[in-house]
Image (cartoon, rainbow, N blue to C red; front, top):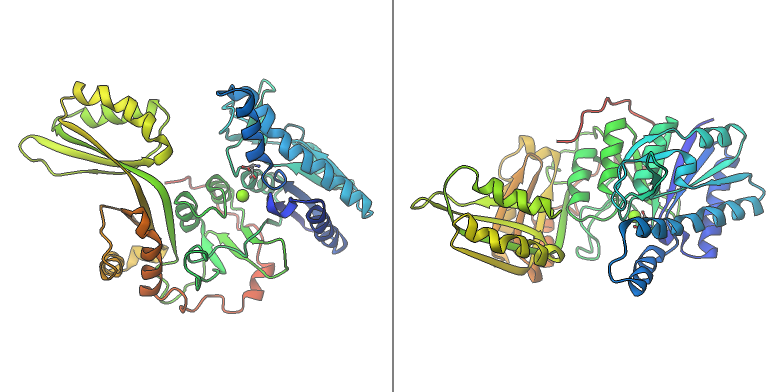
Length: 430
Ligand code: ASP
Ligand code: MG
């Protein structure tokens, strides 16, 4: 009898009818002889609604009370799903994150899981019940409620699969799996049968919203194979795992677009040790996430430093930087909204040449100007005008033939059963 963790996202549990759809799927897996632990998100847009509700009460509510409020969304779903299961004759018990043994690090709204005992979940499974666990929440060592950051239910599911040493971890969502690019942008984008943790981490962090990046990190650390699939049909989705079968010709696996970025340039920065450290320490202290840092070559004892932040964080970043620019002796501060990142990702890049040239050529043919280029071993990112990002994605997708490359394994039905643990030792995140 295999232990299977199934996670259903907000859309999949968005109405009473959909909760019953989930209950039927869970009951079918129980009837097939499996032990099922289910992790759920809040119904539909509940979390967004709770955020607006809080803002209508107080302009700047405390993080503690926000965590208490936001965690209620998932609590509604666990109780309703457990009721639906019992109504179908399937024994079930619901557990909040703290009841399930999720211990978090104390940061209120973007907490990390530090331990997950799952004692009561294991007991419920041993008693033949379905355990229904609230995603996205836990309690710190003092019993304070913490939430895991938006989209964090995926992370609860993968951590639970690790805690239970589950046979598989299935993330059910409203899309069919992980695609070579967002199909709303590139209509002939293809669903991948498999993708490595590293590729998925890059895509997830770059804005492909299908899986929470920390869930991928957790899967990689604990060797949990993650199966991302649709809750609306039974076709297999995409397996996220350590190694994938060799795919001839698929150097590029996916393309991610990230709109809503802002570019900041600190111009005429004195070229001496410690200046970049001062600038980025101050920004880091303000809790702003910086990306794509580029420094120009030295010119008459000065450099220019460029970087990007999420457009929402621009005002905060400028407030920190304005006084600092004078302090460090820099000449000017520029900023520009309406830029976007376009990235190509693929493990095969490590051993290939010409990928960057191909990406740049594809954009040049569309007359798209590149402002910043940044690369890692398996990723190339360019900063371009936001209103050209969709053209860029289509051009690059076409250039690399991502709609036509053969996908391995060819017979995707083989992937349905290949969801066991792969016993990888944690190798950390680079
Ligand atoms: N309900 C939370 C959110 O909307 C967590 C989740 O759905 O994963 O972000
Ligand atoms: Mg989600």
